[in-house]
Image 1 (cartoon, rainbow, N blue to C red):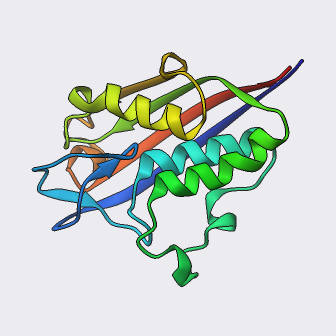
Image 2 (cartoon, rainbow, N blue to C red):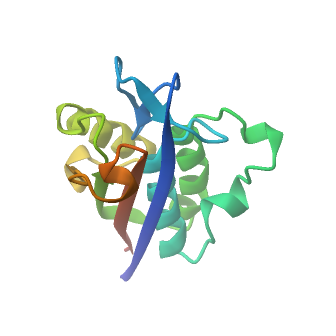
Length: 160
């Protein structure tokens, strides 16, 4: 059996008037949303980088550059699915995925289960293998001032 671990990190500015989509889940009523070339979903971007990192596959920016108009407004769950397909094709499966979301808003806990389900579907695994947790910046740094959302992800993959 082969085990591979990868980590990902992403941060997006939060701006008024943007839909707030994190982990593939909409947070209706949130007055700010992540700004990005795609939908700005920092959670999916961090998870994509973690998966790619585990297999030495580079990073999300190499696969889906923000200079390419094809990816403008793209659904980041779709980008994750596209990045996962060749990894799955190599025979890997998710042992577990742990994600930390750092932001003042939106409140992550009420939607954490839905985020885990969406990511599990994208990664073709069971929801129980996905953990979503959140913390606040407590007034410190750009997260604490409500300027951005940051996501950190660690994934363990195995190839039987």
